[in-house]
Length: 515
Image 1 (cartoon, rainbow, N blue to C red):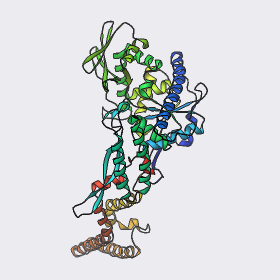
Image 2: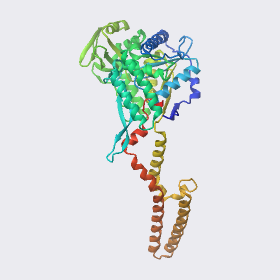
Image 3: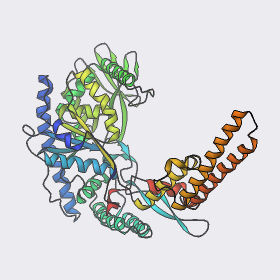
Image 4: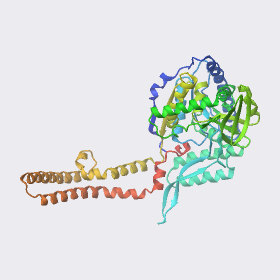
């Protein structure tokens, strides 16, 4: 894979990020107190989590990360945060983590990545280019999907395939990549799949394996990391959660109102964007939390039902718990003993992370869109100014040369009609060969002379039918000359089937294809 990123989106410009970085403070004593203790707890817990995974890597005979972690004292140093599901990273995510790490290091900040292990998905899925036989006995490249995991479940519970399966898959990928002269990608794949096999042998989870192999390849290897499930158990997070559960319907209505205002101000007509409204019916409402059972490895949307002084928490059609009177953080702790958690979802994830921990949060393009709503909701509900966020995303492609050819040919095809009917607009740009440009200039001069003659004939009131035929003939000659020059090139487009196009334009190939 070409090591150069393209399609960079960094907002604001990277050189301006330092202007946004400072130790955030709130004009809210209670939030400030929660934030101070939460930040210390985050750094200590993340250090322990990373060190534990270094131990897993050591058990699997994987070289330890020798680069120093971007840690420190949160009372004196700002915290730069980012996060994503513990999946196999593609170029956009790799760039986001590399940019976050570089910025934190340059500015002597603590760098923390949150592992969103509470989402559901295939933690081991990745794309790769596969050679498939064609009807004429040749072979063509198409986009294929594989996985190193055994099932689609909560990311934090996903398991690796067994050692023999991973070795077979690694060999298959090696054969496919080398068959397409992608030797650097094959080399990177071989190294990572050796690590996956070793990690499977020591019974590492898919989440752990994804983090360790990513660190081994230097992607976010200096960042502290911690799963969201661990953060959701912090007393400070439970306190914010309890505050919402004390007044669930008021919160849901305020959330929906903020969403409506946000959509109206940004001319968004789709009511599912950036998030659907919470359901509110009489004394029952939906809340932006998951109720997660780690025993059953399932999650369900949390709802609350009010009945006088009583609050019922509901999920999946059943009652999870019932509280009488005030709901406190301590009252939520017994659920943790049953391996049941209330975990924020959607915009509430970064709302909590930014309120309690972050001084600057680095998003990709998707998070950057929805966190503009989070900004407004933090201001309206908590009445504080949210710590800032930035955006970092980019693409890196595997078939860079083929993609350039495809883009050029697509450009020719898209502009062919314009080239046929207004070729003079491209004179001197190098689009046409010298011989064709000379021919077109001559034809256009003849056409213009005929048009001028037609105008004179019309002015006299005479018939210009024969001149019109001459103009049409010249128009056809111009069109045919342009078509003849580009037709051989456009015939190359036939080699780019839809499947081949998908493989060439794919920006989600795994980071280890970079070699």
